[in-house]
Image 1 (cartoon, rainbow, N blue to C red):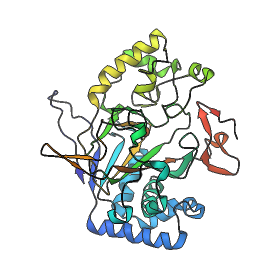
Image 2 (image 1 turned 180 degrees about the vertical axis):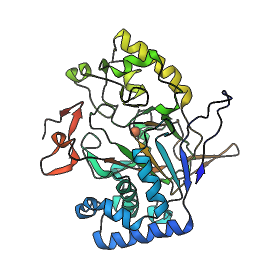
Image 3 (image 1 turned 90 degrees about the vertical axis):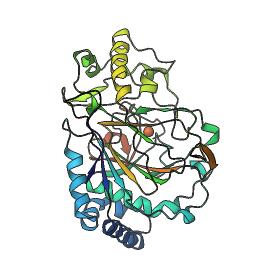
Image 4 (image 1 turned 30 degrees about the horizontal axis):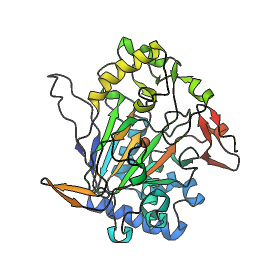
Length: 365
Ligand SMILES: [Fe+2]
């Protein structure tokens, strides 16, 4: 196991917690590929309900033992040493020719090309164990994986389709009570060499006294830039930190909770959030640049993610700009329990989440 843990320069004694990177061996990669080939023959698509229902057993049966151990301990380790992100380097060989030119946007992507990668990611979630689910709030459902592709028309937005501005760190769907527990980001291509951006609540040395108000339900938690906020939703309040008081979880979205011009937090709320962000922004980690076939697994309660601004389709080599294929990343989200969120899933499909905002469901269902 190759750990990226390093000594923090500003501190002589404190070791800063960092994501753990695991290099997949050739034999492990072959095991995963063979498993995916077999599962694809048997179930055709990773969306097949039989496959998704049995994904835990199938993961135990097919995944390399080392990965099973790492994933199991990751899922239940909320300690001070757990960053909340795992990097699997070279999990899967990506057939670049088969993918072809990057489509203009996620709407025009051919998902059949991502089928094998969907199986591989689902097995990782299965091993945690956690169940792949889809959210109506994200692209009206649309399946268990989302292709994140820079879209020229959306380049300035705070969404997965943006590129020209920094995407602020956020936990996914911070505006939902039943947000995903775990996320996977599989990099199909990253020719622009955009570093991943991660920020863990565990990077704070301590939860200062002045952060205490973050545990109180006094914060406006607006929806993200993909969605419209109704007046009643702006006024619904919740906490930013929750769970254990010393080793908390977080629902955090700097862009929406702190910098959305339509949102006015109370003075107490604004002060606590600003203080928190002042420290948090210097704890953001962006030293890892994912390569094709890498997968990052994130505990969405411990670790936020974002992205630096980049020029889609441009690769800089020694100061010279070259055109390249635009980036493609596949996101999958999962929940540990289908029971806990049953009030917010489709009557006929407990894997389909219809929560719109902090415990309120979309009216269409
Ligand atoms: Fe996100």
